[in-house]
Length: 284
Length: 260
Image 1 (cartoon, rainbow over the protein chains, first blue to last red):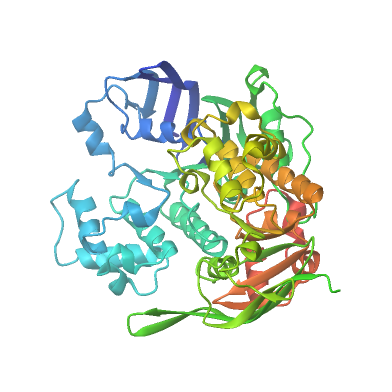
Image 2: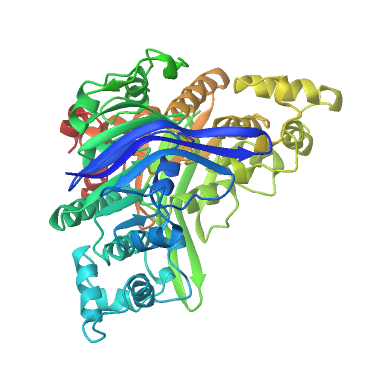
């Protein structure tokens, strides 16, 4: 079953110098329980895609065309109050920098409570703390009681990101969008957070859209990959296909450009500065 | 004469935080030879940036010594100090937004009186050529440049004083992979051309493997492993290094197999 389906989405920003097309008719599907990655360089449109899904980009200077179906509702046609019901409830988001996405003035518990109360007032006050503790345990936090009563600055980066993950889980969403969730973390912590995310998502049967520029992270995490370049999806396919037999020259160049840990020489590229957009798109 | 350019001996830096003390760098000793490319790796909080700051003289040491060409590094000595230059992680915040590229690059030339006044312009253009830019960039401001171009300007600025050693703090972590590769290739080329010695502070181990001949692994202020890079990656001795290497996300099966 397809959970999220983006059809021919086009997004344009109007500004004083003219119009910038951020997304050029992209299409993307996420099935139930699937971990999909959107990979691209900075400015390729990956974050815009996530923000469009959440309805976080809407003002008169943004022109959008196409459809974003979430369980057969077109998110682009919904009113902002209906979007609010879906956002944080059925679709939630994990951001890049955990420490700055947590509110420095409130404890973790207060913020978790807020995330919950935005969508339901109908919960049992006596058991709610237990529910939060369980969520924190889900992301392998060993002393959930302490963390629950901590402020953001009292947590390490990896710990704060795990809190963000458990906050994204509060309302049992069907889809989680993660925008560079491990970029700010050390490699050992990154590895841990990735495996925790993977574990929690498959246990709770959720879907995830991972947005990243780090192909190594994507390879470890995703089932399916979309490669985006200047607002256009150039290649899509299973993780195995993308890494073992990349079809588009841009994907091949990206993979070549990454320094490898078993080589002592910087990689050399077969082709550089090509007009990647003129090459045919590749679907595995 | 020995080939060793920089000798760090029993270097310790203690920060006082309120009533407690934090030992950021704990009894660290190592030597760097001319033309070396040394990487100092470790996680955040391991003390690698403090170590770089100590070598640059931005931080005062608590005990131990740093010798450059057999002379104690004295940061009041301008002649000695200009020999060690620095390239920071984020080029946008390390370049002055109000200054043009020309003004940014002429400043170190003036401060250290590298060349006569009337030659400054030619000199700046030469610096830009080192980093594959040209005189069209002279009157531009940092905001009108891309991330890769800004980092090139930072490198050109570090080259202005004709240094012996350049310290890079995460020079490419803010860049996309294709740009990263270009900058790393450029650094290798400049090193060759100008006979430089590099120190990289980084947590990206795949980059370390590709650009340095020696690697120092730090954890909690101490050096846990120090060897030539090939050795460190192929047969790491400390548990911590193994753990670090195992954690690197890779993109090929061959890399995965090469992990300890």
